[in-house]
Structure formats: C-alpha cells, structure tokens
Length: 384
Image (cartoon, rainbow, N blue to C red; front, side, top):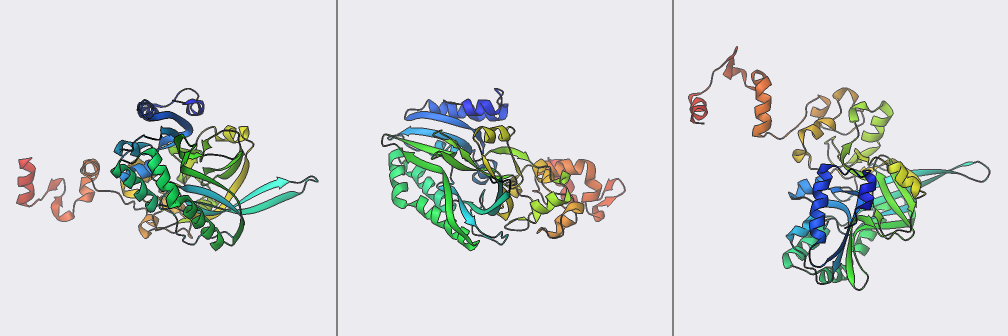
C-alpha cells in the first residue's frame, strides 16, 4: 500500500485518528482481488457522509481491483457514494446566491476571479464560474445495488458505463452554469470515478485522473486552483477532515463573505463545508504544481445538513455569537437571540442538570433548593 503522499502531508507523523483508518486500508490491500491501494494527502474520514449513513466512509484514495473482485457491504468504507462527481470551469457568469438544485453534500455553484500581469505590467482579471456537483442520491442508489447484488468490479464498471451517469452529471453542471450566464466550458475534472485499463479497475475516491492538469478545490473559502501535474492521480481537494475556521474571530468583511456572499439551503447558520479549512502545507502543495488560483467571490453551497448529529463542540464552534451575525445573513431568529439548538440526550441533559438544574426545571417543581415532584416521579427515581 502506498502512503507516501499522506506521510508527506503529516511529516512522517500521521495522527492516531487517521492511522486507525490507514490500518483498515492496509487490511483491504491484503484481500484477494485488491491489486493496489494508494492513500492521498486528503485521505481521511468523510465526517458528514459517515454521519448520514451511520457507518465510516473514507475519502482521498485510489483502489485498484481485479475484474473478479466482488463488492460487499464492507466496501462502503472506501467506495464513496457520491459517484460520478465533477468540477467544471466556465467562462464568465454572474455571481448568484439564489437556490440551485445541487447535491446535499459538498457541492457548489460559485463565481471566481483570478488575476495576472501581462507583458507590460497591466493587471488582468478573469471571471469564471465553477460548478462542483454530481448525481447525488441516484449515484448512491446505484452503488447500493452493486453491494446488495454482490456485483464484480467488472460488472459495476460495465453497468456504470451503460448508464452514462458521468455524461448526465456533466450535463447537470453545464445547465447550472448556464443559469449563471456562463458560456464556454473551459475545463473539467471528474472525481469519484470508476476507470478501467482493460485488465483491472480503479476507483478514484476524491481523486482526479489528470490530463497534465487538474481543477482542484483548495477549500470553499480559499477557492479553486488549476494545477499542472504528470501524475496518474491527484487529490480532488485539499480539505481537512474536521478542522474549521474560527467563526468568532472573523473580521466584519470576512463575516460578510462567509454568511452573505455564501448561501445554502435552509436557515441553519452552521455549514461544515464552507467553514472547513484546507490542510496545513496546502501552499507548498500548490507551489510544487505551478497552481493558478481562482478566488471565490460568491456562491451557493450544499448545506451539509447533519447538524443534529454533529458533536456539541462543533456546533458551538461553528455558531457565531449573536452580536457578530451580519444583518443580511439568512438564519433562524433563535440564532440571533443567542440560542443554540441541540439534541436532547440523557448524557447532555445529565451534564446540564448538574450545574443548571434550577434554571431548567419548571418553577412549579422548585422551591429554593428543594424539588416539589409528583409521586410518580419519585417512584421512578427510587426504582432506579
């Protein structure tokens, strides 16, 4: 198993939380029919998709399979459900933050700009539209059918080719760009794709098979980059697993960029996609590949709506204090009042009651430091 890119990212000190999944991929690489596994620099757990499906789903790797390899439920770990995703760049287009029909997770339609200096020192600007989207639930359904039927790698590839899902995915991106007034498609980079060299099969999980260059997502807030490479695979993004922007340390202009220039479905102000940071060392990564940066100016993003399943620390960290929320930001009224919504579990209620019981219990049940409870409640308490 090739871990060179991941080892370089962590400077030969892969953290234990990631190493646990490296070990799982090592087990996969030793299975009959698995010819090679390569972990990329963006390897890690897909937090939102894992929470959605209730099982670990990894991202950032390339798996090479023999034609007879049979897919089983354990392969959900690496066979990412967002099949046939892609990132396409188009000429021009006007920034819009209206609602678009995009995937529920990690997709976007946004305006970008890049700058260069010509031969006589004049600053040149170029405006483009970049659409990052896939097939959503229909792709997930196809993958599930492969697993339930015990499809082989060859059979899955043949079915995927016949379905022309990647063509449909590209047409969806083209249609979204057209709604923004964009014109010519300048380039496209597919990821989460199943390829074949005629003898074996390759799944590029959040990896791109570049044709000398690739369009990668550095991070939603930083933007995208066109990189030059002679490699056979490259990371489709440079995102961390769960390292987020400190929303309460942002300046006024930055908050406007995060909550006004960027929009998503619904009124929950928490967005784990837009606020996710690129990994440390991303500048070196881009520099080594002669990257041309495209800065995001505004756009519409997936909501990544698994808010009720997020750790409480993440919910708190990604909820800006009421005093700093921009007036134009779309959010629930309770958020502007400093109220945070969270799941009511025995664990959280127990912790809250320890220090805040007199505030949480209705006044009709409290008198000073004494509880005035119905007999039935006392009976339940004693029974435990």
